[in-house]
Length: 285
Image (cartoon, rainbow, N blue to C red):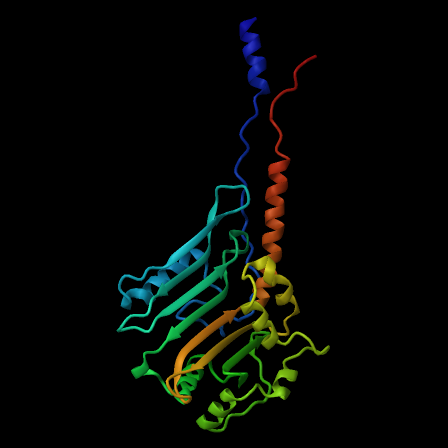
């Protein structure tokens, strides 16, 4: 009798469910394999697990500065992943200060970087001229889509850099454009057929908003480009010098795609968790 009671009780105990299996999906990307812009080696096809090595390689010349990672758990599982990677190098007598950060999607969408920013200061006695800095930027990223409002803009669509037919015949012409408002014709050319979606406006919205995927998804879908790189050059000790350069890389197409993949995966994991039922035989009444 006792043995039968023990067997019956054991049959009613819940059996531990297996852990939720994350099946990564590669999100759509705003950049092509052949055209993959980066900021100090970090592009939007880099996974969070590999970002630390890139940061550490860059930081080897900045003793004592280490990358900091923020992690999260995937839904109700014990799977952790990197959501943010950053570093901050305070200004010293020998270095004017620098910082960088990157945001990553969840493992469901391959934990890819979708937003990268870098702020680089220049010491008073080492400030490059605006002409020199524009030259450095164009050597790295190519011919810009547009220059104006203190920024050098690169917009990408269908795997290529967009063109609004802006020409800068001389280095001084590029500097003049940098110091002036963005050409209205260029701004209009960046809109979609309905006159909306300019990535100039989207850049401003992203800079002023929460950088999490759900918050950026709607703007990413509305953007009339797949991705962008923007370099803002701030005046230095004189108007012709650069005191600080701010770099921004945003993959709009990846944001929209990864946001959907992640949302579906989080919902599936939650649904599976809610629907877990004890395994075993029902008692005989």
